[in-house]
Length: 239
Image 1: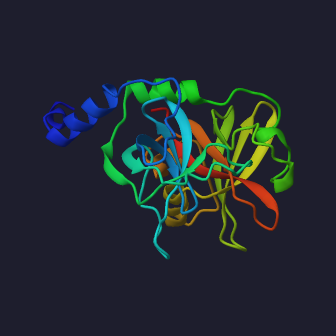
Image 2 (image 1 turned 30 degrees about the vertical axis):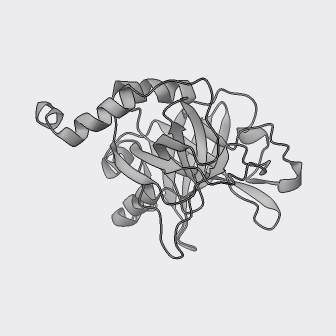
């Protein structure tokens, strides 16, 4: 650790994150520059914790056609909001649009991240996202519920690979519910594919991922044939 602390880039990220001015709410002024800590990233959406307000935000990033996200959990990123941030999606009230691709500044981990994740963890309040089953009709959403949930699983998680269609799933227990979600976490998908196993859990999953997963980042998709679907967009360590 002492060797890494002498790295100017590491020092710069530590200084940026730990001395970021604190604001009670997210600044959503068009054109504003935001700094975020990545929690999960797919081509559709990148979920970050806004470092200024410690609030979860979903970034719509204009990735070029055929280009997949290269952002990973706990990357520190800088993004500029578009002139029209498109806040009209009632199924994804946290989502905003960026003007361009974000800039990766480095990575940040440690005690503060552990505390932030504990604060962001979703409390028990009925079924995940307020409804049972894998999806709900888009017209039922009113912008009253978040479209992101950071779940501290009380059982699991378990990673499963379906041979028939090649899909990867995450299974976990949460306040009595047995939850199965399609996994969109690229790191987790690559990990189970490399093992050629049908399932991973416990120590085997921790060894394969390189960490013990403590949180399941879950999100709601954009409408697909009129329905928004639950998925896992990240498996995260405790910090």
